[in-house]
Length: 233
Image 1 (tube, one colour):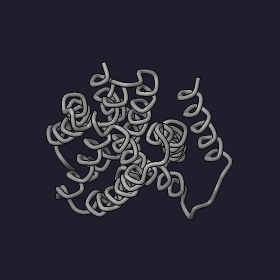
Image 2: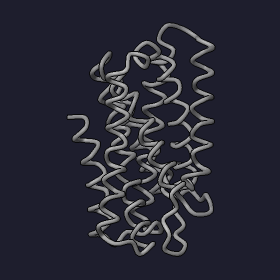
Image 3: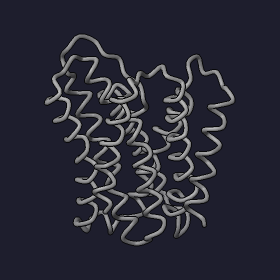
């Protein structure tokens, strides 16, 4: 079920991008992106961090949070920040580094969903939905980015399919490799670092010139409320 949902989120994002003639300057897309960032941030604060420090303050967990933040910071140099909802299409050549950075990001964030779901069913679903809600706008961005590079439909579908399975591959790894279960708290910390980087970047960069507007504020508040209620109720 989790694998199907992750794949469906990518397919849904691509379909929406296709039928809506999406571009990154559309206001409604900025609101969706802001909501996804707020939801991701909310789940990190209300569930992932408390889970990581469930047994008290740990220096190894604290280090893993910093490690996750730095890993995502490094991935940004390869992905160009496309996982934040930003892209810059130039020419017709597909930047392999960008795709690899995006796929690695998707793969890594899929691992904790299965580990946490194995131990805490309800909260695991919250992390899974955080990933899904994050994947939908990113899939929109990736799809329109490939279209603007004038790629053939077959090549676009191939790349979108590879992106769609990258998350489930991480989920399967977390489910079947005992290492991740053994160090579940450190993994939660590492995930929190990644999510904190991605979510805060989305929230602060989803509006041009960093201007706050009422619609974006509503999107962020809704993201926080839904994230909080989905993890504590």
